[in-house]
Length: 179
Image (cartoon, rainbow, N blue to C red; front, side, top):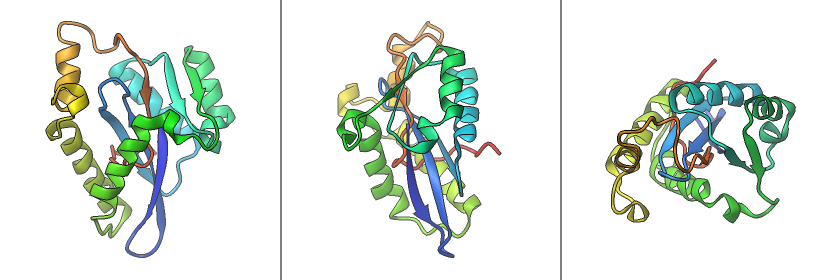
């Protein structure tokens, strides 16, 4: 789980909260908003928990939204471990950092966002394309979505064998923002 930032055509800034499943490399969500406080992060995680189940561990950096009370309480109440990477060691969150680089190069840097709603639409379209049409050599040349479907065939998706996922921040794919 990580954040990225960019600007709209009118020079107003926005952030994205990127969530990437370490196992399947699937970008499970990208939230786009002008500000994404810790309480918003927990609402996104609750939504994803209802759709996919809870991970055992979430890997995060030391940003205030991740190190604050809201996420800490959320994780404690649900039995989820927060694994904080060492400061200045982004390689410890490599899947999300790799995703963020692709997201920046292929989406953020190539699009002109006229409004926040425009950014949300374009980022979500990129996220869907990333998950459905982009094979990864590390997944046996399957797309993240195909890999996840193949791996969990016949089992409930909420009980993955490797339940870690990271929220990516530089890979700006967007799901409709929770307000």
